[in-house]
Length: 422
Ligand code: AMP
Ligand code: GLY
Image (cartoon, rainbow, N blue to C red; front, top):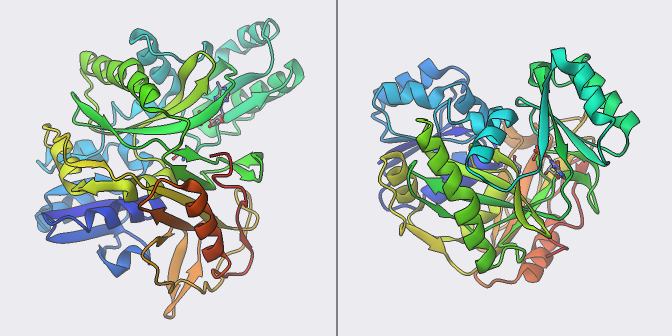
C-alpha cells in the first residue's frame, strides 16, 4: 500500500513511524513531515491547507490511504475532498469533525446520547446580558469556553464572579479567541483526574487504545498556562479494565451511534478527553483526531499491524483484531523552547539526537534542517519517549529523564514531573 500522512508534528512522526513497520506498506509519504520522518519516509513539501494539491498528489501517486493528523484540515474538509475523488481516508468528514470544532455541537450530541458530561448553558454574543445574569446565580469555580477552535486555548476556569465577567467580556467583546468566541459555553467545573482515550472507528464499530494521561499546563505540579501538552504517559493506572468498559459502553458507543443516527458517521480517531470524577468518567471534550503528545506514548504500545487498523476503518470494515496492547509502558517528555506557549526564540542547534537505544524514541515536533544541522523551529521541539516492554511507568520515567540530560539546545525547557502521579 502507498500511504500519505498529513501533518508535521510529533503526533504525525509517531503515526508515520508506526505505519512504517507494516508489512503491507510499499511507499510512505509525509506531507510535509519533519526532519524526524525524513529518516524513514519521503517528505513532500505541499501546503496542507490547500486540499487541491493534496488530492492531485494522491491521484498522481496512486495513494491507497491518506491519514490526516491535525484538526484544521479535517475541519476544513480535506477528507471530504479526497473521498469525492475516491481516495480512502482515515479521518472524519468536516461535518463529523464538528465534534471538536463546535463545543456546542459536541454537547448536543452528548445530551441526545445521554453521555455523562458537565452541565452547561450556551450564549451567543448577542446574549451577553443573559450570560451575566446567569453567571450571578452560579457556584464557583465555573468554566467558560469559546465554542469554536482556539488551538487548545479557548477555555478559562473562573474562581469568582469578577473573573467570570472579565473573561465573558474578553471572549465575546474583545474576541481574544477570534470568531471561536461568537458563542460561549458556561460549564460546571469537574473535579478529578484527567485521561485521554482514543477510539478507532469505521463509523459503526470501534476499538479503544490504552488510555493515556497528558500534562497540559506548562509548569511543574500543573501550574502556569495551558499548552498543547508538555508530556504524557500510557497506560494510565487511573483507567482500570472495569472503567475502560464503562467508557466504551457509556461514552464511546453512544456517541458513535448518535452521530450515525444523525447521518454523520465518524470515521477516524474519536478522542475522548475525560475527567474521572467521584461519580465516574465524564467527558470534558471530544477531539476528531489523535491527541498530541498522547499518540507518542500510545502507538508504541501496540502489537500488530497499525496500517491495517487504519485502512480497515477507512474502508468501512474495521478489523478489530489488527492491533492489541503489548503489555508495555511509555513516558514522553516534551522538550520545549523557553517562553512557550508565549513568545520564544528559535533557530538553535540541537545536539544529542544520535542516541542509539532500542527503548528510546526521539520524536520531532518543532525542528527544521538548516545547512545539514537540525535546529529548533517551534515551541514544542522534541518528544523524548521511553518505551518499555514491561508495564513500569517508574522505570520508563527514570529512563526518559536520564536521556534528556544528553539532549541539548539553547533555551531548552521541560517539566520535571511528567508521569510522577502515576
Ligand atoms: P479542553 O480544551 O476543553 O480540553 O479544556 C482544557 C482543559 O481545561 C482540560 O484539559 C481541563 O484541564 C480543563 N477543563 C475544561 N473543562 C473543564 C471542566 N468542565 N471542569 C474542570 N476542568 C475543565
Ligand atoms: N493533548 C491534547 C490534544 O491533543 O488536544
